[in-house]
Structure formats: C-alpha cells, structure tokens
Length: 273
Image (cartoon, rainbow, N blue to C red; front, side, top):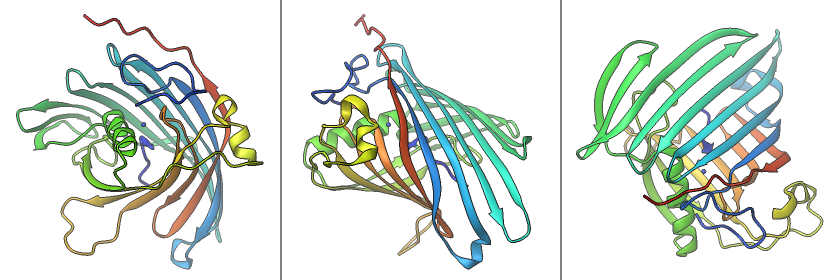
C-alpha cells in the first residue's frame, strides 16, 4: 500500500491570515494532525469487508535547518476470513537548501516487522543520487525530482499563481525507495470556509480560513499512454500546508480521512546566514 508522504500527503508557502506564524522562509506551519480513517469503498476483488484506522502526521523544522516529518498510518483490515493490523511508521528529513533527503520506513503486520526501507537522496548534476541501505545496499542515479516538502511548496506557489493543472516528478522514498513517481495535480478555485462543517471546526484557528480543493494522482514513470494511476488523493489544502478531508484511492479500495485533532506548534527561528 503506497502512502503519501507525505501527502501528503507528503504528501506538504504562504501563511493564511489566521494561521500560525510561518516556519522560517518556507511559510509552512509546524503542526501535528490526526486523521480518523474509514473505508469509503472497496471492490469485490480487494476482498476487504471493513477497514478503520488512524493517521498521525507531524511536521517540524525550518528552511534554514531543514524539515522533519514523522508519519504513522495504522489500519485494521477485515476480510471474509480474518483481520490484520498494519502499522506503517515513516520518518524523513529534508534539506531543501542543500538538496538532500533522508528517510526510514518500517512496516508492521500484526505488530511484527514486515519490511524496512532506509536510505537517502541528494541532488547531483541534472538528477538525484540515491543511497539505499535497506532492504539491501544499492547506489543508483535517477532523473531529477522534487522532494515532498519542496513539492508542497511548489503546489502552494502554483495555487497562489492561479495555475489549475500541472505535472511534476516526486521522490519520497516510498515502496522500495529506488524510483520517483510522476504526479499530476489539479487545483480547484479557492473556497470559503464551510459553515457548520464539524471537521473544519476541529481545525481550530484555521476553521474560518479559505482553502483549495486539490486532487493528485501518482503514476509509474515507465507507464505510457492512458495508464491508470497507482494511487490518487484528494484533500482540502490551507495556505500553510495543513490538509483535511482526505480521500485516498488505492484502486481496489478507497479510504476517507477526517481531521480529528490539530495542534499548531511554535515556529522554529530561521536566521539567514
């Protein structure tokens, strides 16, 4: 199961009027967001009869010192025969100024370690140099791509400029950590706060802020023509990088993520050298 880093999720630069102060020069707010997950749809082929879970995303750092992300994605998946507990834990560090990215992801099934991916990437000439330590030692070069926080800053910049559709390459260390993905992003017109929206109220000081509806699709780089995305996500994006109302489409099943808790942190100082 491919996760957004950094949906973004990674899936991640301008601060809105009521948001926390910006983190350094990037404008992204340091925060901890908790999302309650539920199954929105599942095909018969998936074999999934039910799924619930929780996702916790914590973002810290500054443009001067680099950005850290701690991400945990826990689901309980029910099928006709049994149920299993999956737990993905990812930690990343991204230094946009120096063009480096480090990551480690551990995936557990029923509380037993199932898979670990660990490595780093750095800009090198016209591309990226990857140094993977787990699951096995590999060094390779790939074409240039944006890292997750850099990609989020690009997204917010384009939204502010009124751009509605664009394509990018992103490297987030997911799967085996040995390739980038092609992303297509659609940005809707900026929307006013939803009156009476319970989830928006849980965003606290952001509750009355405007947001962009965004949808992103991830494609394998080797695919050609009208290939189907490996993974798609839709969400509401605030100007400081906080997201809510997630819809994560894995093809055979779709998860809904509703913001349940949001804690804004004080920004780290960013002193220009």
